[in-house]
Image 1 (tube, rainbow, N blue to C red):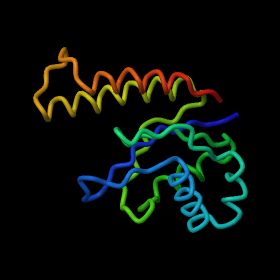
Image 2 (tube, rainbow, N blue to C red; image 1 turned 45 degrees about the vertical axis):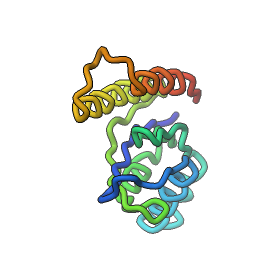
Image 3 (tube, rainbow, N blue to C red; image 1 turned 135 degrees about the vertical axis):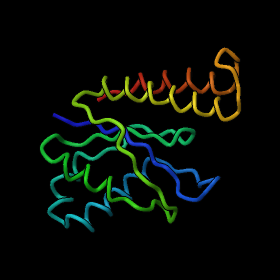
Image 4 (cartoon, rainbow, N blue to C red; image 1 turned 30 degrees about the vertical axis):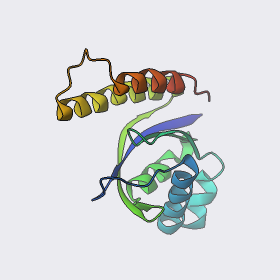
Length: 147
């Protein structure tokens, strides 16, 4: 049994933050667990911790961890301060027991972020733009995730 975290990584003070990959996020969470919960914390979470999805466009990721020790992972995600030398504020948007609900929350959150981007650029929602292409491709990519 697993818990699925939907996390938004908000860059601090950087307009163009460097592009991250899932392995960078995994390594940062590992380091956070070790520094905050020690080897015992890492031993309980390490085997099940997986970054299943990361979108550099919206800075959201889906993380899987075993249900028994998900609070350790949650705490270490919350206590994260930097990834690959860049400061980030992690925002846990959703925690669920199934990948399906994490996928639905991720797709809904992507739509909210794109709506914010469009509002900033004053682009109408019906306008066919690169955001629409991104929404379609990310929805397919997120829906294709498996446990």
